[in-house]
Length: 361
Length: 217
Picture: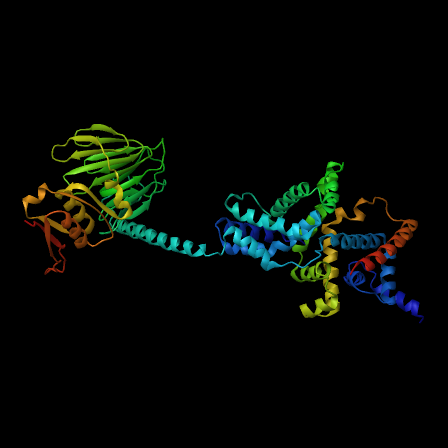
């Protein structure tokens, strides 16, 4: 058999365009050198059918045109990465801040979940508006302040020992209704179609979008509302009297006289400092001191000397034990105090700590 | 050939993570797309430092607007649009440099709308198609055509025979040719081949091969 015919025989075997060996050959022709034998095989295939030739031309064109994408120098990923990552602040240590924030959020979420579970187990006393809605209850532990976000974006800060009852969702209701027991600071999300209403003891507070503080601790003889921003309409539930408040005003509903009055306030901070963990006294009488401290620390404070009632107290405290607070207060006034520790009783309950206030003179 | 369903799902997932600010997702996108985007940018501006700088800016922009990205089914396409726009801006600013000027002239010349749109469309589609090739075909193709490795070197790296490398590249070319046929010679041709035209084409192709082989480093 002559060499040419053997080549022809070989190429007839590879004549089928479906056979991938021809592509292997083409690739070799583009990236390396073909032997004489291989060249002949390729040429034969190209001439065998018009489609073959077209395909071949296409592939060569493709190969040549792809040269435009070939970079002259090699890429340095590391420097590119450095450029991009420094300018975006990624992986730069901000990560740690994010982790901390997530941790703080987890604590708040946990608090809400726990109270959610608590209220689920004690479902009998829910607000009348609940119907088919699940009412949730969040309580701030003693000595702490808790921050809650409601489903409409409203933020509520609860002071030590205070409780907020609210529905899981405000959808399909005429109003956004919550109940406060204790002290809460509200930053209400604006919604003209759905007024936000807070029930706090004998007072009903209606708001559109605003920031205000409600002091409705049970042991107070009055309920008070301090308005920071926006406008609220108050309703005295005992006689349906209404009162509109402007910013920097304080309204007080006296539980005994059942009257609702309002007045301008010079230092609003006094009423809202607690949301930042501060206790603020500013020329306040002893009764105010007693109320604030007993609510905050969950202790009983007894005034054993009437003389104390004529004194005024001033001071700002952050995260301090009650004895420290009293120490400082007593430096500027003629007050002394005595602490009675908590006592475990026969039925395994523990009484609150008791502090007895006396006059130094 | 192109597994669109798979890619759509992947893109959706990566974008969701990116939207959430997941830095690892961004890192993944960087590692996957940085080089092809630089290649694309280079094919437009014809200068590597500028091309890299442009793509880096695009990545930064991507991160900055991660929360507002919507209705994107193909992230690579989306980023290519960003790159192309920045390249055009760059070319307009760099009129002084002669190399840039030539590229710019091409951009602003009296090309018909069709031609202007098709500028770099081939490169864009080629890059996308290469990304969609089967993994080993893609690697062999990239190493050979873009990184300039010899078949022997590629064989060593991939731990296969030289013949195996050629088979992978051959397969890649077969698949790519189908994907990009609209940009290739056979698309324009209408008449079926007759003997004379086949001979003529053979002569032409012989010339082309010689040119290809000498041009190929």
